[in-house]
Structures are given as structure tokens and as C-alpha cells.
Amino acid sequence: MPPQQMEREAPQSVMKTTKRLIGFFKESRALILGMLGLLTASTLLNLLIPDLISRAIDTLDLSAGRLSVDWDHLNTILLILLGVFVFSSLFSYFQGRNSAKLTRTTTLTIRKKVSEKLIRLPVSFFDSHRSGDMTARLTNDIDNIANLISQALGTALSAVIVIVGCIVIMLIKNPLLTLVCLSTVILNVLCTVILSKRMFGFFRKQQKSVGEMNSHVEQSVAAKKTIDSYRITDECIAENDRLSDELTDASVKAQVLGGAMPPLMSIIGNINFLLIVAVGALLYIDGGFGVTIGTIQAFTLYSRQFTKPINEVSGIISQLMTALASAERVFEIIDAEAEEDSGKKSLSDRHACSIRFEHVTFSYVRGIKVLDDFSLDIEPGQRVALVGKTGAGKTTLVSLLMRFYEPDDGCILIDGVDIREIPKAQLRRTVTTVLQNTALIDGTIRDNIAYGRLSADEKELYAAAEAANADAFIAKLENGMNTEILREDTRLSQGERQLLCLSRASLTQPRALILDEAMSSVDSATEKKIQDAMLGMMHDKTCIIIAHRLSTIRNADKIAVISDGKVVETGRHKELLERRGVYCGLYQNQYTESD
Image (cartoon, rainbow, N blue to C red):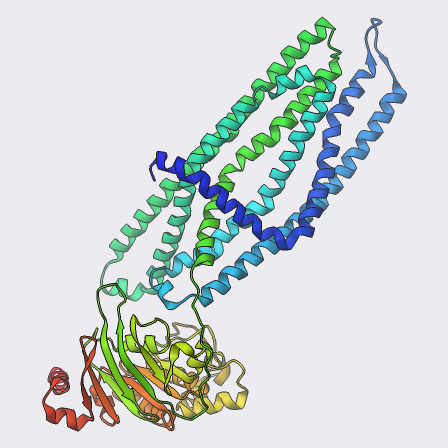
């Protein structure tokens, strides 16, 4: 972002994001009030220290040419100082505990809100957002916000109290020296504002680069076999270096500007210190302004106390900018439009359901139709196969039926009810999908099957495994149902993984079953096992089979041939072959290629 544009946009973003972030503290008012009270008490006690030291110095008298000390007064002051140190430390300790609780409570609230929102976002959201970047927002970005709350919030509140308290005390002690002390404040504020404006854009770019880097690393790990197979290791390393350079460039620029603030503030503070000592000495020599050695000493200490919070705030500006840039990225997820569900109509509990696509039109990208006036009737209990070339729109039909996406035009009916009027939870209990890509989770075999219905008991889990013909291979595992597996566990064959997914689908007891290329990655022997399992599962269910291997759909009640987003042929296997149309061409091409 060009510097001039950054200067125009950053202040508005900073204020808006800061106000939004403060809104998350509403649930922790008691903690904030307690922290503020303890912080105020501790800070006020610390503000008494320079005055007490000043009074202690003034108990010394050299006016008669020799040192005399008012011991009673000095001892009283020293005892008060001891009490101030003890209570100030106690208040600081309890304030730190409250700050830790506030950090934990607030970040937990934000993390839960983001996690819940991610679960409720539509599939289309993840089509345009990388999973690595989402992970970075949920972890790294929220950690940055936590650091801001735990470290910067107390510093900022303390700074306000110290600055106001110092000004009040100094005005009471000597207005003229107070003006000298305040003479450099404008310079402090001006430097802070100018640098913070320029830093914000770099920190925002830095957090974006972190997300891109995470996505690249995650993708490289997931596709390790593909990278090695296609010999693109060097290209991956080059891309990693490019992303690293971008992250380093943004980080260095942000840190250089952030690192410039403490020494700059220190120089201004030292100038302020010199001014107080010089003017104070002149006033003491003049003797007409009530300035004593103790007064000068007090003002030098108050000057340090006054400029210290300004320097500290300047020092945490980089941390503040990082946290606000992270908060912006987190709020993007929170503000994303959640999956809508306005359905209120209920479906009957029949074993099988009818499904109808009426003049459905759909585009992922505006102007490029994937489905164009698509219509198809599926009767209750009917087994319908969808075939066609890659990109014809077969899998898109499944996504629309599951309401992962909404059609641009037309409607889809189940038992005569528009699926937009059916609650999504009931719709997805009614229709279950088994995909080509087996989606297992880290856990036991039992956990993976129970993912279909978490409330299922042991008897139901074993029944589901038996229904999917998965019980045989599960029994051979070392720990049976309790065997631990990973998402990408190579100990399980593709067919065994698919049988687990079929077990999971069986557990949901759906009224309609969709098999999306469920057997495209298995051998003939495994295909037979899966087919036998599916035949049992299809009993009393409406079934949609999407298949590339046409041999698996010969016994379908109806085959719908899709081309360019439309149904161009329907019929049974033999009927379609006899017509010598599109299906016959697909069938002959497939067997010619296999020969």
C-alpha cells in the first residue's frame, strides 16, 4: 500500500477496530473495574514516592554551614515510604492476576466466536479462503490480541493515571516547572502519531503474509507425495522463499518503524530532564519561586515518571498495531455471512423419498453456467445413476441437493417440498453422501463410525459396520474398534477407508443415499465388497449414484446422461445402449480405452 494511501485509511481502520475490540470486554466489567481499581491504587502510591523523597531531602539543612537533620520527620517519611513500597507491590500483584483472568476470558470469548462462526460458514466461503490462513487467524492472530490485553492494556491505563496524577501534583508544587516539564509533550505526541500511521499498513501486510505462509506450508505437507512424484521440489522451495521474503520485508519495515520509537522518546525525555535541571537551578539561585533542592529532585523524578508511560506507550505501538491488524483479520471471519437456514417445514418419516430437480440453473462464476435448466425426477426407492463427462455438473447436483450452494434459478423438491423450506439439519439427516475422497478423522475406528451420529450406542456402531461389510476387516485389526488411526493412515487401504465411510453413512439411517464416485479409486475385488455393502444399504432408500466407471451402474433403475448442464438421455442400461446415443458413446469409449 502506498504511504499516502496508508495515511488516509489507517486512522479510520484503527479507530473502528479498536472500538470493536473494546466491545468484547463487556462481559468482563467486574474484572476490568477490579483491575482498574488496583492499578489506580498502585499508581497513586508510586506517584507519592518523588514527593516523599523530596520531603526527605528537605529534612537536611545546610544553611548554618553544617549539616543538621530533622530525624523525627525523616524517620516518619521513611516509614511511610516503606508502607508505600509494600502496598504498591501487593496491588501490582493482584492487578496482574486480574489482567491474566481478563486476557483468558476475552480471548476465550473471541476464539469461541470465531470457531463457532467457522463451523457455520457455508462451503462457498472456504472455496475462496485457504485453510492455512484460517488456521493462522484462529491461532496466531488471536494470540496477538491476547498479548495486547495482557501487556498493553495495563500499560495504557497506567499511563493515563500517571500522566494525569503527575500533572496535578506538579502544578500544586510549582506551576512554572510544570510548564517546563510539559514543553516536550507535543513533540512526543507528534512523533507517536506520525510513526503509528505508517506502521499500521506494514503490520496488516505482515499478518496477511503469515496466513499465506501457513497455507503454503500446509499445502506442501499435504501434497508431499505429489511434489516428489512430479519433481517440483525446487519450485516449492522457490515459492517458500518468495513468501518468506515478503513476510520478512513487511516485518522488517514494521519493526524498524516500531523500534525507532523507544530511542526517539528516550532522546526527548533526556532533553526534558536537562531543561528541568537547568531551569530549576536558576529558580533556586534566584530564591523567589519557593524552589528547594528537594523540589528539583522531585521534578526530575516526576519528569521520569511522566515521560516513562509516554515512552512505554510508544514502545508498545508496534504491538498494538500487530494486534489491531490481527483483530481486523479475525473480524473478517466474524462478519462473514453465515449459512442461512429459514426452513420450517418438516418431512415425513417414510423410508424412501422422492427427489425432483425443476429447471435448475447454477453458476459458480457469474456468466459461466454449470447447470442450465436442469430437470430430473427420482421416485421413492429408485436407484438413479448420473453419468457424463468430467465437468458436466454431476457433483454440483449433490452440492445443491445438500444445500452447500443455492441454485441461481429453479428449485429442488423432496417429497414435493422445496428444500429451501426444510431445516438444513433435517435435510442433511434425510440425505447422506458418501464421497470419492474418504474423510476420516484422527481417532479410533469407533470415533470415525460414530461421526455419523455421535449419540449412537455400541450396538448401533457394530450394526452399522456389519451393514457396510466393514466388520470383517475391523475384527482383524489389533484393537478392533479401539484401533487408533490418522486421517492419512496408510495402514488402511482405500477400500477399507471407503467401507468405514459407508458404515458412518449407514449409522445416520438416511432416507436418500448419494454415492459420489464412491468406487472410482478401488480395485475390482474391493469394488465387489463395496457393491455388496451398498446393495444392503440401498434397501428401502432412494439412491443417487454418480459413477465414472459405467460397469457399476448397469443395474440402476434409471440412468440420466448429463451434458453441458442438462439431461440429454434417460433410461436403463440396455435401453440406452440400443439408442446408440451419448451413453452408448461413453460406454464404448470406456471399454475401448480399457482394452
